[in-house]
Length: 240
Ligand code: HEM
Image 1 (tube, rainbow, N blue to C red):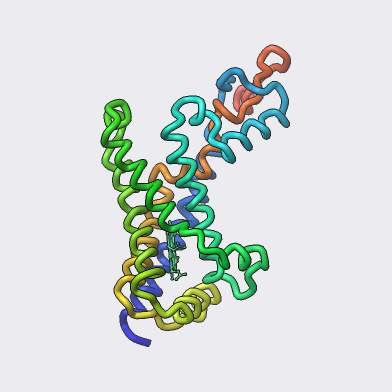
Image 2: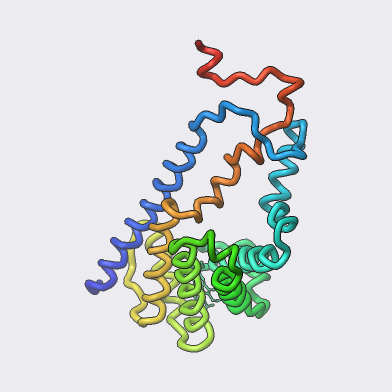
């Protein structure tokens, strides 16, 4: 195996470890942070099943964003939807037996990479153009979008313009998954795509991308609005 493959195999394992342990550490922190006050954003559900329904609407439809800004909702929703399809299409690299439904999806040419890229560019320029959004944006907001844009562009080039050795990609990824590393396809565009994805994995737990898990721990969204019906006492107060 050549030196380049060895370096990238080590890089991939480091990136995945940082991602997994970083996300778990963040979730642990969110789960153990006291939430001593009842602060659900009203109108809020008064039952546990209502909270589940509210969360499903937030996660599945971005309901709050829809009511606050329809244009950004459209861009954001499209971007997340396209990302989900792109990731589902990538499953074939990670599993030997891919479920029939997923194989079926991949038989359609959805130009999903282009939709993903267009939505990202839209969100990037909205941040620049709309005064209020620009005012609350920090460098990392642009950095994450730029990183995703670069991943999308290199993915699109790999798929449509400078084909990589797909069989080679599959055995490289399966080798990583099964802890029996194999050589990496050596073309520049795939190497760039892969490197950017590894950087994304490393950055994920420390960036706002962690909202993917963090949203479930948001007290304004996950609390039941029952302060008048039920005595609310935190564990530490109950002990004292
Ligand atoms: C280790 C992880 C990854 C590997 C090995 C990988 C590899 C590839 C390969 C080989 C292609 C070309 C597909 C084809 O020819 O059918 C591709 C396309 C693409 N990749 Fe990735 N990728 C990875 C992760 C990601 C991630 C995390 C994203 C998004 C954040 C992404 C976004 C894209 C996009 C947008 C395309 C364009 C193709 C399309 O329209 O389906 N990739 N990737």
